[in-house]
Amino acid sequence: MDRRGKRMSAVMGGVLGAALLALMPSVPAGAQAPAPAPAVPTVAPQEFEKAKQIYFDRCAGCHGTLRKGATGPSLLPDKTRKMGTETLKAFITYGTPGGMPNWGQQGILTEAESDLMARYIQIDAPQPPEMSLGDMKKSWKLIVPPAQRPKKPEHNLDWQNFFSVTLRDAGQVAIIDSKSKEIVSVVDTGFAVHISRMSGSGRYVYTIGRDGKATVIDLWLKKPDKVAEIKACADARSIDTSKYKGPKGNFMDKYAIVGCYWPPNFSILDGETLEPLKIVSTRGYTVDTHEYHPEPRVASIVASHRDPSWIVNVKETGQIWIVDYADLINLKITQIEGVPFLHDGGWDATKRYFMVAANMRDKMVVVDSQTKQLAAVINVGAKPHPGRGGNWLDPKYGPVNGTVHLGEGKLSVWGTDPQKHPQYAWKVVRDVTLLGGGSLFMKTHPKSDWIWVDHALNPDPKVQRSICVINKKTGDKTAKCWEAADHGRAVHFEYNKEGTEVWVSIWDRKDKQSEIVVYDDKTLKEVARLKDPRLVTPTGKFNVYNTMKDIY
Ligand code: DHE
Image (cartoon, rainbow, N blue to C red):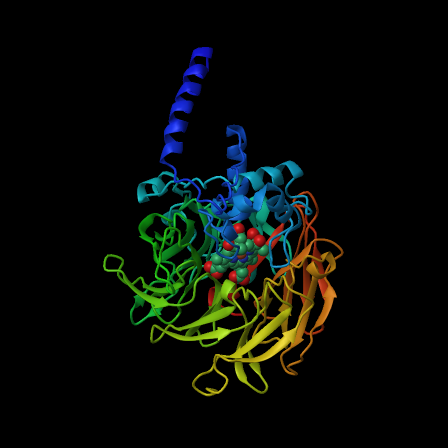
């Protein structure tokens, strides 16, 4: 601004200031003047893009794109400005026992980056753009059209026993052969693939990147590789396929569904080509206070084996939608009132009941996919996080399922058989003590005697890498635990097709060698330790057969 400009502005400021002062009510004698509004810190334009990216990569998943809160608390500026830069920086650096990661201590954010993020969350959140079917189509790549794909497997490997392993920070998945434990193929996917799900036939693996890129991998190719990809949204966590085959039609491999965090919607795609067919918004009203929510994100999705339908969990509104995909033009959606902040879940052994964690409300919500109704709400421990859970027969209580918790060290177990064991159905019948909170996943197999649990987000490094097993037959109150490695975090379990071996990831930093440890499920002895340099930050592992059939 030149000198004249500055003088003008000072004059205008003076005039406007005097006019505003005249309009303001004067403070009555004896009353206290209101506290001045907290100052808004500055974020320079060149810092803004960096902060936006860090927020997307590290914060949006728990606090929401618009920062209204979900698994983590709301970070709206009226709250964060009161906390101030130094307090926010301490949270970002050291985390909290409630599950906020210690980004600074872990070396993931530098001190300058923590300071930048502490300032960034005090300014208004930018709203990312919406996406149309046309926008999605621009990124759609049909790499191998269905007609050019093999009619039978081009290799002799047991492809139903492959594992699809997320290589989180490499933006890849590794396809690993269960028998030889060799990497058969490494496929470029979206960034930080969250989950892999299999088509009804098992031939195709579908992955979803955190960046919303969906990829379909054909396991029958000589070297399994992607045959189509599309960026379905800007931020996503879930994908599944149509698995129903029966009197209502054959929908095996026909559709895929992607659940998005941003824009808040789900989209239905052609199963073989990923051509986008339909987008359905999830914006709406919360089940409890009936307030409009601008960003109800899609959390877990599961495909029914009994009906042509998907169960779609809408996180912030707490609604569980049963989407009947038999007729996409006249789409039928049953909206069930659950509990807000829905997250992850899975089927009971009969695949009739679906159980999902409302983790910020310490509850599991059960829907009956047959009657399409809410079946129960179960009070469990602090911040349940079951993954897809696990089903087994308890010697006393019959068929049961359970969850581990982010907020406390215990496995909670409840009955799942309202027909033959109604007195235990949807009631917690056992609690087993674990090493501490921060558990993310549990897993079992119908042939196993054990339930395996991790503590991947516990703040203590020794506990982070420790895993425990609980004996199903004795219904122990305590677990048998050990450190699975001397570094990294032990996270997520998966069985081989036979149910004889359990794989666990040792998830270390991108610049360190991570591992996958394989245990014999009978003896609990280690049988292999996979240390291939291509195993960069392995997290989720999905056996083709078990994922296709929902065996857990
Ligand atoms: Fe996950 C499942 C969301 C952090 C690894 N995670 C899920 C599902 C959701 C979800 C909605 C269920 C998908 C389904 O079944 O359709 N996860 C989120 C988040 O919002 C959160 C809290 C923060 C974020 O920004 O993403 C989050 N998740 C993580 C991690 O930090 C993990 C450990 C490593 C990573 O990749 O980021 C992680 N999440 C997983 C895995 C599953 C998963 C391995 C699948 C479990 C299964 O067996 O099905």
